[in-house]
Length: 441
Image (cartoon, rainbow, N blue to C red):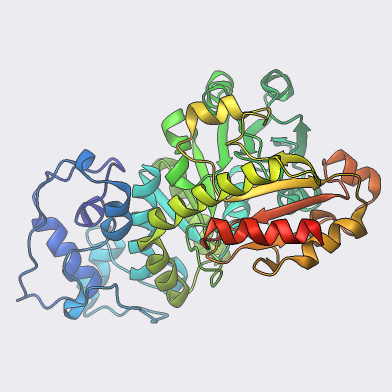
């Protein structure tokens, strides 16, 4: 089921192709249909306000939500129903024939999902958004919809190792060929495209090297060859970059990270044009890789403070990176906000902030010496993932690449002395002092 424009407009969002000046009658009717508001109630009309007047925090709080919800609740009620009833056969026929948009069965969606999807679409300035049970599920959903036997997909080689694994090991069983080219090499990307290529994929920034991709150039290659483009913007978030504005077709986020923001849920989202996402949504209805209403409630609540949290993540990331860059025990720092990063100029031209993830290497250290720095931290927790309120630290060699060969790790740029530090929202002075004592231990 697709997002309802009038429903999204009633949430006062900025920009996802929504005209907030439309009459509110249909939006109020949509509230009645979706949320069970008694028909004799009188929801307050939405003020007619130009979308550009809304800032990001206002969108985070209000976009995608009806102004008046069921029973007058200020937050979206949690709808735990697995199935949704019809009052009559005539009402069912209205639904089947498309005259009445509502819920039918939990695998196809629920009211909580529609509210959060609309909010996420607004933040990325997309026509539509589809939520999944995880970021990997979102990627798999798109790939399973877009690719068939003898099709090809082209990746930049700095990509999440599970994305690489799914394509190389599992899509290959269905006759799909995966091609990897050096990250950021647009000529190599263009040269790899054939008449069988269906999708171009990249992260921006990449993980853990934090390489920024020239989004305009990437989108241009897709347009020139008639191939769809996907950017995984998990590390950037809509607070720092909106790839759709650069002509990218699909944007992927692991909402587990900054969007949820509290290390307490798993979710993924695809954003893009409605006509491109309709078949993906239909496939999700078959696969069933949806999220639970309780998780959706947590995600919507996390999004309310998304802009505020990202401001602190951006500040902490920059402060920690600048500290590490001048530390005598640190060999190299990967952070897009530093002019020393090879793709700093690209990032500065298209991003408004650089996030809270910082990768660095320890000078003249083997993996055991590096692990002692990780173990000596007192604030950051040793864990995978990123983007939550708590700072996390990990050694990619141990956390994600322990079972890879040394040659494979070199191929992927994973060194024994590499540390990935995800800044939470703690005070930056405390994080810096903690890292300083760990590096001196």
